[in-house]
Length: 136
Image (tube, rainbow, N blue to C red; front, side, top):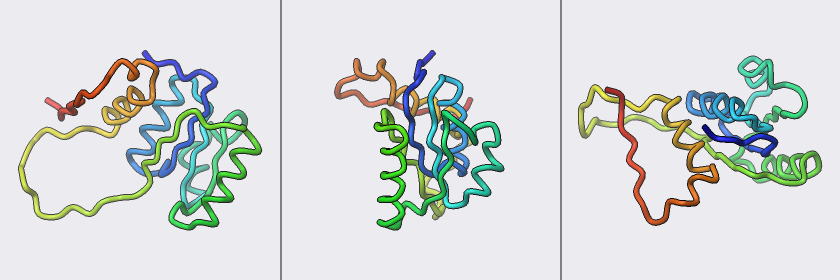
């Protein structure tokens, strides 16, 4: 559906639920992945098949300025560019529910939305809202 063949994709938060789904989705489209997480051990355990060229697993705390600078330097030296930045690092804490539903968007479905937004096809969308519906 989408072609990211030989595109350099930098993904932060790669070992989280959404990050893992986004990494798998970009990998399936032929992207060269730079996967960033806080723990190299967790990155290697999560992505054992992506721990070699043309991919790169990097441990970095993206809340620390020095770590981000070092990450950017490493990526620039190895690849010279980044075609897609998917910054999904972070988390959330659920509060009081404002609405109950039996329909939830899966990480895989949300990853497909992210792929679309990073694709050439998204350039045809101007000023439009993209609804994301749950399962069902």
